[in-house]
Image 1 (cartoon, rainbow, N blue to C red):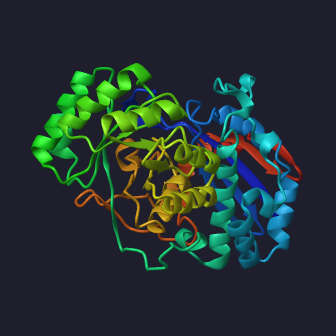
Image 2: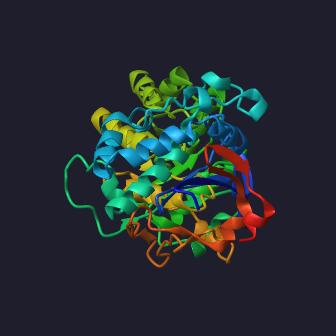
Image 3: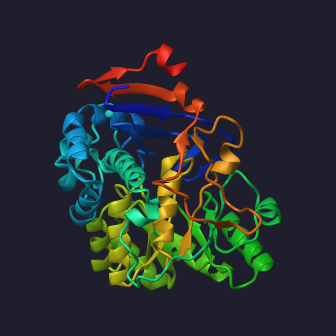
Length: 417
């Protein structure tokens, strides 16, 4: 292996159980995993691009990565002391600290399968930043012998983080409410993926309230499927059934309609797809369009940008959730968990379901990121960095290798090693 090498994996693991919601139906993972090796130390990063969120796809991010000046990235990783580079990353952000401008490299293009808003879409290179930044942070974690949570800024209070965190349970359209209630507890927070039938959704919320009582928060995630005409009556119907919040009910960035919905229904609104950048969050607050935001590492452009969004939410009086992309496969899981343990004041934390989606030997990382399903709680990622390594199962998904100044397609012989 050369002194500086990168390898990209395009991971499409079949899911043991599917996951359905109004914006997408998923039966395989769809992630990119990046391995960066510098002088014998390896860092792993991951992104999970979704075209309906930032306009990015695994194809568009792969093509964008080919345009990144990797020699400049590796030179910066070599010349900077790890603690100095970490301080620069925290202060200046990934691109400035590494001397990179990824705007042009990462702009989602129509020929890459980008979403309808095109290359000017907010967050159009967020997953590219996330892929590179998480790999760099993991590498720094190994160099500094520090777990991922310690690579992030401390919480505003400076208090020590908790030993465990409770996680939410998500009821998607692939499972009936009775089975969900019988098999997925104990419950700390319930998120219901909306259907196309508001009567069904109201019955679902009523069944949850009847079983769990009034104290467990319940949120319905409409994934942009409501319209300005239906939003207020739908929200009132769900409010009467016992919902506490609705998530992303309208087409993204429908600021005025969201303000109207909040005022007319009295229901609290969490935004997800509408808030890909800090500028989005500021626009939502200025428009009085939300009460909370869903912070997801890949969607929001990496751990450091996600941490900045959390800090802004606190300053603006917004609640926030630490969320996940469906079917994350490795480093991204522990990246989100590191953020969660730096954010103990989160409204709730999503742990994902990698243990249910990928229970067999096909999982590409070790040790497996686990959830204590007896209590539905998380422990902190073990470290150093994200505390995981690639397993032999990852090899089949390798697509590109960077060495000696160029990207090369990964050969079948390399995949079989």
